[in-house]
View 1 (cartoon, helix red, strand yellow):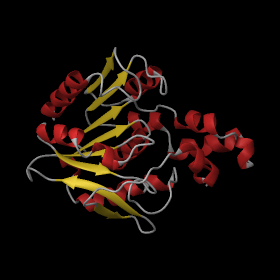
View 2 (tube, one colour):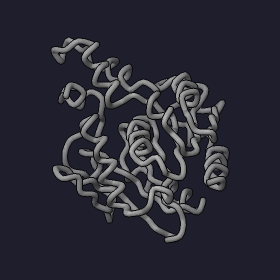
View 3 (tube, helix red, strand yellow):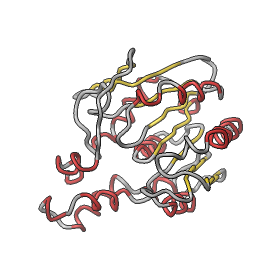
View 4 (tube, helix red, strand yellow):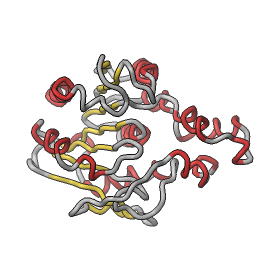
Length: 248
């Protein structure tokens, strides 16, 4: 598996340590994920959040988690291999299967889940939505349209002893966001900034254009960038989420 090559893992992922005080453990066989799960209302839907690169679950345990709970959903913060308090090491394609382990660990029907992916988390949120098409809704924040372009930006195929065509073939099998979005039936909300300096707004525009669902919204914030989208647009950001969740 070229896309799981250790060089890609080292250059593409930026794990940090820092486990939640009381992790909700997800068993992925060779790795244990130190997630967080708060159920405030057993009858409410659960929002499953996949964070961005260089972030960990613990970054979201205070204000963000509570803000989501105030919107009337339970909150599951998913961790990645090698991040936070999880064991194992990040591996781009292998971690796609971890979405199934997370689904099994939550133990709720698809219809009770809202999936949220930020930045690199969009890869795993889209995989989750593709595997479980009856989810209640999907939110993509600062998401990626073309993962392969992000990988090749950091790793030259020659360093891996393969051609770009070989990498593209694997990406088409595992990381084709266009096909995954075309199959999407659940309502979709895409949040992005006009001035994202890491993932250009063109990614958001492609993602919304590809989405095959009838209910889809793209909201572009005029302020902030990739890492300040929520900080600089707090009330408007949460209002977008409130309106979306209220429709589900």
